[in-house]
Length: 476
Ligand SMILES: Cc1cc2nc3c(=O)[nH]c(=O)nc-3n(C[C@H](O)[C@H](O)[C@H](O)COP(=O)(O)OP(=O)(O)OC[C@H]3O[C@@H](n4cnc5c(N)ncnc54)[C@H](O)[C@@H]3O)c2cc1C
Image (cartoon, rainbow, N blue to C red; front, side):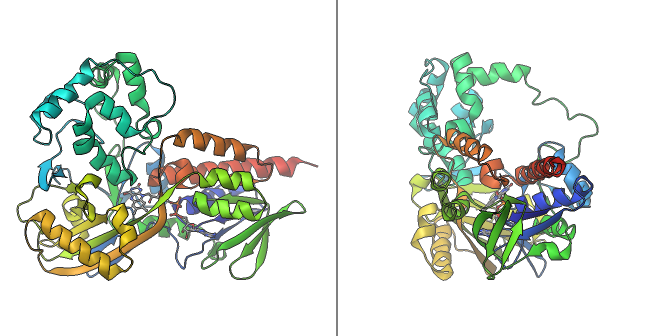
């Protein structure tokens, strides 16, 4: 009973971990994790040097639900958890070159209350009046998904989209509001509009009946419902998951180049030149990579479905400064909307949010590069020079001495949730439900991108595999 897990990121490691944790249900189980890179972790990578902890990929996650705390406890990581500094300061938006705070009472840039909207200098008087029209405009009854930009432009007007929503969704989801899917990113707003006519009225009425704002139930972990990270870096999660696996279960520098099904078993052609077999395959690969393997099997239809999910590349630079780059600036982050046409798409004042990441007095800042610039600059030196020039303009002063800078690039790493995404995923799920061979498909794009989602996705994959193995063991 060999299970081959493709990919050694958080999703793949979680699948292997949960499989082995439940091996009493399949005593002959053997799990192998195949990872093309020379290290485990996928996009989770922490660089630790000289008293600094620098995340190259994710730097925190939103701790929702109990499952995440259960796994952290099992891995002995509960005491390593750190909650984001509540005094880190507000988020700022760069609007026509000026840095202005995001008004309170917004969620992912979507206004939830009218008063802060009326007070914000981010909108012109005409923009504010237009936003208030949400209270009276009729709902749109058209069926099907629409873009985030289209929906909120209709409710609140162009300025709200430009100044509030696009900076947030653009930064988090890596694309313009006009191509991102409302049904995927904001599934409840359509319903609010349909039921209450207005988003603002709907939010106010539904808040009365929602559990938000009620005190935390007794016994809940301190980081529950907050952004948290690990004091020693998120890669510690990767190390702890890997530590639970037998040493011969992990195969680094071992890409899976081809998959075939022969005589009731999977055959995996590895980049090392070897061929191995497995009863079940769990794929945690990006959609485009799984598509390549399916195409090799002659499953053109499945490959074409997977290739409908677009991916973009991302890059960020971590700067370790000897002092704050904007003395006196009270913010935790600056968002730069794509319309500002800059190299930088956002700046995270990491050491304000996570003071443990550098020694006192120093400043750690992570700068995320706009999608178009990621493609424009091919070398790390070019990208760093362009970012530094842009930061000087953005901050309005020369940069303090840079103690260290680390450029991180992730090729085709971010799945874009474009209009129709939910429906596309449903078609992909239906395709694999009827695939006819023991292939379990997980990974960020199918389970949700957050680290807790990837852990839960791995757990569900393990459950599916164990059920399959139990049923097949019973067959004569
Ligand atoms: C820059 C960035 C910042 C992020 N920030 C956050 C954040 O702050 N909070 C948060 O919760 N989430 C964040 N995310 C999302 C989150 O980190 C990811 O969704 C999650 O780590 C993905 O894990 P995964 O195992 O599904 O995929 P991956 O980490 O992509 O792992 C897939 C693995 O498969 C391997 N592979 C590919 N092809 C093959 C092959 N043919 N054979 C064998 N191996 C192969 C790859 O080398 C890789 O290691 C961020 C993501 C990025 C890129």
